[in-house]
Length: 249
Ligand code: NAD
Image (cartoon, rainbow, N blue to C red):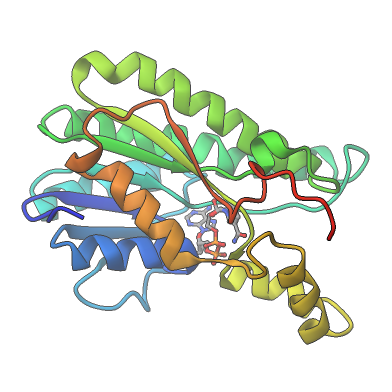
């Protein structure tokens, strides 16, 4: 990975899981990093925390502008904040459907809109959206979540087309099942979390979950000048979950 010295990055949802791993890796590559999150109070140095809910336009604009001012500009935006939902199209009331789209799709719209004036001033501008294999995999019991991530993947392509001539690259990563606090919370709901975790590992082609650090590495690559010719791409980091068609042995 080339050094990111002199580049400034903003990571939404950067206080936990994939976002925190990404913020750390960006900082390890010498970028200056701002974390936007609901509760950034525990974000460690040298990361800078900014409190905002991506579903609140005023909060997002205030936090993005403050980060850009404190860091003296923005080059990289990682739209990672997201929430899940379990169920079929019959589940969840309209409020829940609106809420998930408001965070997973409109949150990206708000953050990117607020960041674009700053990104236009950068010679290495890059946006990376954290999508999911749910966007295209046809997973059961994930109707609402899949629809929101499908919209986000389409939005990524449209944004890449709209801003390519401005030198702003836009890509997404599509993680499989990643070992983060989010997945830990889901496993904790099982009668036997340890057995459920073992079964989940066994269902993965690699025999284990993807790590947050592995997803972070893909995000930082797409955000870096090393990916200067990559835009409009969706990079799966799923341990082969979607691309491989494995048959039971
Ligand atoms: P996580 O729950 O560990 O972390 C999510 C972070 O986002 C938290 O710090 C949370 O406070 C923040 N956040 C949530 N809603 C927010 C809001 N409205 N405004 C600002 N911040 C908000 O989750 P994770 O597993 O690291 O997931 C991060 C992203 O990766 C999500 O977009 C998720 O859809 C995606 N993803 C996760 C997995 C997985 O298996 N963990 C798989 C595919 C995609």
